Length: 227
Image (cartoon, rainbow, N blue to C red; front, side):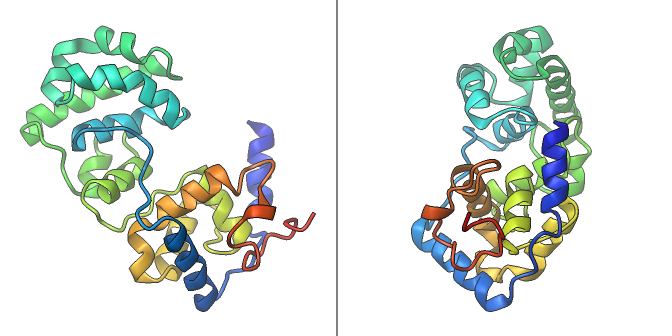
């Protein structure tokens, strides 16, 4: 973890902010390669999306999907999750890191949704962030993926790509989020965070970025891309 923190600190401010025309060309290429990028967390409705994203903290999407496929078949609403109970939920998600605390949070947020929102997931960032285990990133994912609001959910992949490339540099996730909102053309805002996540996950990797096959290599400000 310390090494990762050091790397993140080095990346912050590493590349200069790219200009508008370069950023537009980058996202034009992303769009051409993948016109409709999708999040990789499996879900069947807004509620299961909230749960899946909450469970994905410090865990991989693959690992969360393996755990939730069976879970969401029997508990796809807040009330059904409450009926399952904390212990029952824990049995389904015990392969996920921090599963006990996550189970507590999911049960608590399910109770709030039943008692205060008639079992429905609210569609405001403030209301979402008031739920246990739901931070700004989770709220933004739900707003973007379910309600198609151009919210930018900045994770470690986006933070890395934003700072390496110069698309959206910033010293912390809030600064990177603002940089995306300020610098990415509005017609690319809806899918921006998906394109950046997928680029970071499969091409602009943390330790060994695949610069030789990168579709934006000629536009990127990453100093080590030619090594």
